[in-house]
Length: 122
Image (cartoon, rainbow, N blue to C red):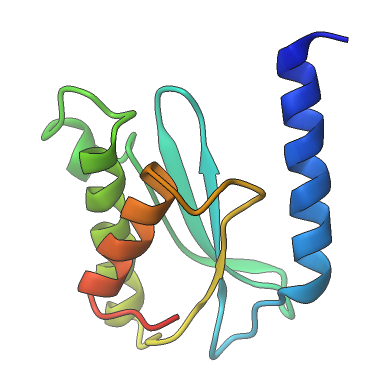
């Protein structure tokens, strides 16, 4: 098996183990993170109702024009601030952070810090 496919398979296993323990509610949604080589995506999900409350990514119109590189720590921090602002505007102050099987390091950590700086608690 290709080494990249092995890494992805291990990440998906970690993600599944985490999802057993983490559930989003309407008052405290799950902040789900996905990162690719070029972009980072985040969405706030209410698992009870099965709906996405808010989402943000480096390909949003608000951020796409500001940045030259979208796959770095600075871009992730801006995405975190954007999702934080959108959730605070909707009245959500606390979330459950779902790092999606990734290490809490680098872009994932920067996204979390950006969301905290916008006023979210987790």
